[in-house]
Image 1 (cartoon, helix red, strand yellow):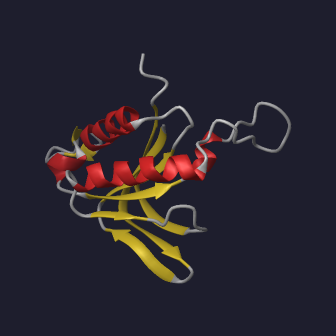
Image 2: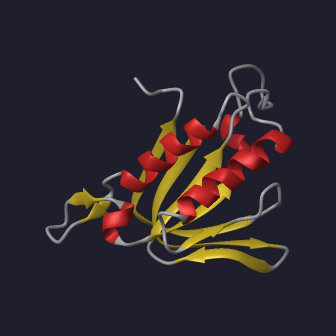
Length: 149
């Protein structure tokens, strides 16, 4: 599983002109699911994301997690995070999970996140989405479940 974590002042997703998810201060999470991922992988990434100390404390130091800062999260599925560009000019998505395999894992991730994060918003799985954000900092962290060592 790959995740791009962006600290935002605000973010929203629009599908066909309708807002499907919107948050104020928090994290915009772009989430890519590989064909090798499992619920254990989803739990690992979720715990990493919500406990990353990327929010400022009263002294202006990045010492607070999403939970401690009482912020929201907007989760957007993005299979293109598994685009392999090592050969040629067209990305290969062979490592990305097929939609029928990725959707249940994406839904699981969102369900588990909803148990811990409020507000939680999402995009629409497998839809063409317009994502707007005001990146705060900017602070952007990349997580990859295969790089745990």
